[in-house]
Image (tube, rainbow over all chains, first blue to last red; front, side, top):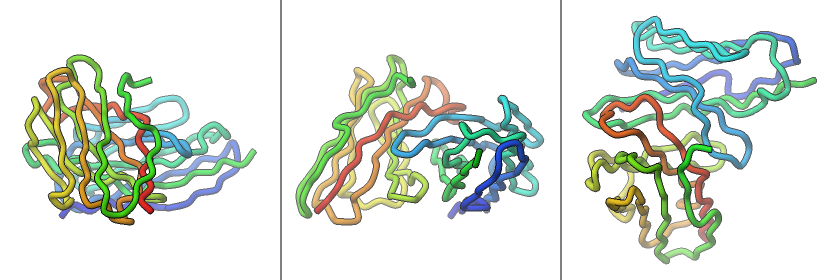
Length: 112
Length: 115
């Protein structure tokens, strides 16, 4: 069964600092998603990574995928308070239909 | 706004009761997935419907069932509610013709509390 692990689970960082969230998964897949969730809200799609070596950037966030290492990273550059949220990675098990397994999430708190 | 709506927003039920949650997708989105998100956890895949048929299921018992209708709406039914069914239930839809869709559009969720 596909396992998706994120670390750290909690991250408190000061504004202006850089940090990376890691997402490891246990089986072959080249379809990985990053989502953001604000407290009490639904999920917002951030990035879709569809191949080995894929890199996507939006504002202060950059996501990459290494399918050989079964690893994705979400890098935060010069964090701002508005980035405070819970970030989930999710992997498509590709079983003939889209069965997406989510990680446990990383709760990010950016301190002004 | 994703164009995906869910109703009701909140619901309180007692153990043993049955509940129906509803989702309305964007026009043309013929794939819908349902997820259960317990407090402090990531969403867990319940099942997926494609063109009104279930085409994939996660590790949930048969008392979790669903329907998808031609008008791009869908339902999640849960029978014999248990306390552990208390969670946020999310539906997510995607564009047609994409078996491995690139983007899922999530609704705002229904928060279910079972007492």
